[in-house]
Image (spheres, helix red, strand yellow):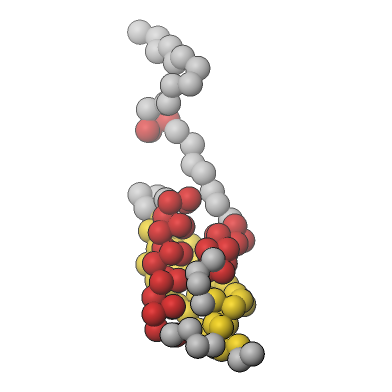
Amino acid sequence: MTQVRLAGMAAPSGQRGRTSISERVLRKIAAHDAARQPGVYSVGKVRAKKHDHRDHSALSLRVEMNLTLAYPAPAATTAHRVRERVIGQLRRFTGYAVTAVDVVVSYEFG
């Protein structure tokens, strides 16, 4: 029997292709969302490393970023909120499971 697929209908999962998202795009998403967190003065270097499991069943991601906070923003609370925001947005936009967001904090006085 011949299968007919109508326009707009998804192919069975075994016949779908793969979507690849560059680490540059992942860094930009992370930086953008970190910068939107109240208390963040600026976002410095951001690194994102993808881990593609051998069977392609899951994609995971580790993020490292340098943040400058506006004094007197609380470092621990702000870093925690940045982590939550970045993890949520990367998951939402890419489907990646974020295993860690490491944050290095400095302050801007003035």
